[in-house]
Length: 272
Image (tube, rainbow, N blue to C red; front, top):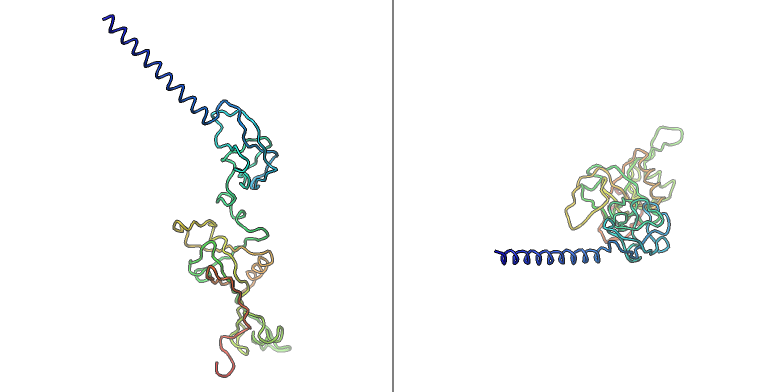
């Protein structure tokens, strides 16, 4: 019995030693992996940084800090953070982590981060017809057609001058370009291609489209276009009156610009 007890104690002791060594090795590996309890060089903010700021080289620096088990997602190299965008305030000397930084086109940054410098976003309310029967996608390009009426009267009378004749008197024959009238001598209605090759920035509240998955917000009641400031003012003017805006989908790779003389739906010359 004494021998059996001694053997059991010896086995238990060996098991204890083996278990202790396994735990020690595991903790050592974890320490090496995480840097916990060590001073290591990480990327920190060299200044206070506002939200939605794109990081540049002069905004960051390397600094040796004590890393504990709670610190995760930090960066070791400046090139890992340059070009990323802050999603919240970051303060001077703060360690930069992946919880505070995102890629420059990340959805969380909103539509403003996706606009080209100098451009603006303007929204147009659309029905099924104006919005090309829900066939638009973010990143498509459209032309903007404006339709309205010209209510001009002959001086001293209530006789209405047709839109075609009004345009001819004010702008000259065949002008403005890319316009249509019912007939030079009939009707007050007109249409014109007001803007061409304009990018669709958002559909409804969705500005992010991943072509690898199905579009989950197919129906939309507004279309947001990416335009220049002057184009934004033109669209605001078109929306303010009694006219109507119609969007026309373009082929994706078509960069052509139409510049046709004014025409008419009912052509008023012989043979046409």
